[in-house]
Amino acid sequence: MNSVSTARPGFLARRQRSYVLFIVPALMVVGAVIIFPWLFTLWMSAFDWKIGSTPHFVGADNYVKLATNTRFHEAVAHTLYFTVLAVIFPLIFGIVAALIFHREFPFRGVLRSIFTMPMMATPVAVALVWTMMFHPQQGVLNYLLSLIGLPPSLWVYSPTLVIPSLVLVEIWHWTPLVMLIVLGGLAALPIEPYESARLDGASEWQLFRYITFPLVAPFIVVAAVIRTIDAIKAFDTIYVISQGGPGTASETINLYLYLQAFAFYNVGNASAVVVVFFALILALAMLLLYVRQRTKWT
Amino acid sequence: MIALTSASQSPLARRGRLRRALRKIGFWLSVVVIVSPAVMVFLWMLSLSLKNEIDNLAYPPVFIPSPPTLSNFVQVFADNSMGLYFWNSVVVSGLGTLIALLVGIPAGYGIARAQAHKLTVMILIARMTPALSYLIPLFTVFQFLGLNNTLTALVIAHLVITVPIVVYIMAGYFETLPRELEEAALIDGGSVWTTFRYVALPLARPGIVVGTILSFIFSWNNFVFGAVLAGRATRTLPAAVYNVLTFEQLAWGPLAAAALVVTIPVLLLTIVIQKEIVVGMTAGGVKGA
Image 1 (spheres, chains in turn purple, cyan):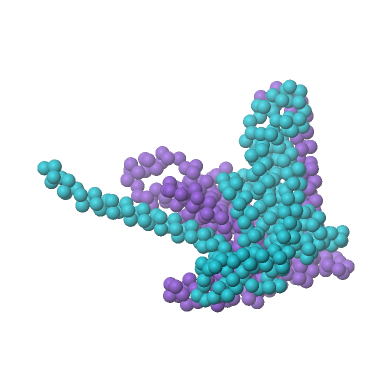
Image 2: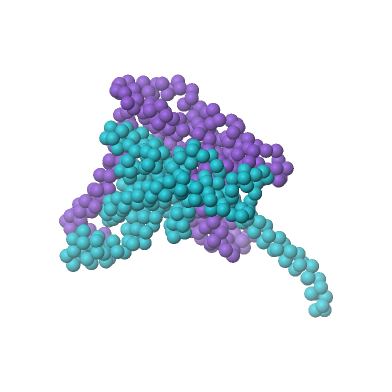
């Protein structure tokens, strides 16, 4: 490719232009369904805009109101609480699972496929089954608790337990993805450092701590970035299982957003929430990407 | 002498063998612990869908359906038009994926050959954006155009999901194809289009399969577009499972049956592309930034 380009620059330039034509139809679609909605959201956020009535320009008013909206502030706090738990636990369990599946053992392929099933299952379907499992009277989870001698729990019906319970679903749902990403990192590990470390008498823990972990760290950071983005955006399972309740105990930004837009049809206010929400996601992603750069991986 | 050494070694050897056995048991135990939650939830779903309502609400729970009944499945298809919703989902995900392939395969090729990698950053941003942020403007525009409650609106909205994933997968796949064949075709006087059509495209079939399946799965699993944009008759499966079944009848058996009907196609498709799933799920996160 490079040799061609140096030999015949005109030929290449002509080709580059025709390659751009290949991208045009997709760009038009992306412009219509992705870029346009972004810009339209920004536009709507400057209006007092309710579906069915005439929009009024209010400038930054929607944003100013958000600054004093305690319900929105609580939603931000719930989102961050949920996100922290829903990143840390799948990461820990995912790394452990990856270390297990990295070893050779009979039926490894089949067991790994079974282990990754939750990740692809339709979130709404998964949420419905968990709703039934969480049921305080007939739910199977309280039965399992009783088997090991623990008192029944209210799960998602308790204001204090609802977010940890939802995180439980999230752990079940997304640990496989972390496992697959870390497993990819483990598969790329060199053998030599292990051999020389073993000769020097390193223990299994030392091998993990000083060789495996640093080498796999970049993959763990990638998993953390993806997990953070997905956890902060979580909607389907929360909406189906708790609808943000009891009260507003599990109302995350996304849930608040949904309510504003499609229960009250207050799209102006909802658009302002979207803009703030997106800024929050962007900030978190940047932070994690900065960490990723620090782990020196390209 | 020989007898003596073997006698003094055997307790040591036995302890070593014991330790190895214990380690093996410990390892398998951890495998069971880590795999069982996945198995249990799906088995419980299956169990709920095959039991009658009395057994489903029994406490302590009944685990094995006896006798198993298909009445829950019959009920959701006969009384709750699951067939219609299934068809809606097939149409929306099918058309959404088809359009994504039509524009996304050439785009992936263009990005790979013109080295326009900056465009894949777009995919990362698109992945980061919450679906609701597309939904609010699209809903407002569809309301204005009178498109709400139509399958057309749903197909358009699903392009938000299908186009980025297809472009991302195809750009990645075309990158891996050797360029020599294409160079040869170009030097023989083929145009860029014929080179794409007759050289690159046939070679890209495995990538197209992965892109198609992932796009279809992500679109199929989407709930919120259907929940907001669809009307009573145009709901996709996930939206229908939540809206119709939960509110019109709270019975667990039919709900579990419906949940199973939604999930099974996805799990079957997953088996086909087992190895490539991680590429799709991390789209934009690994390569894009």
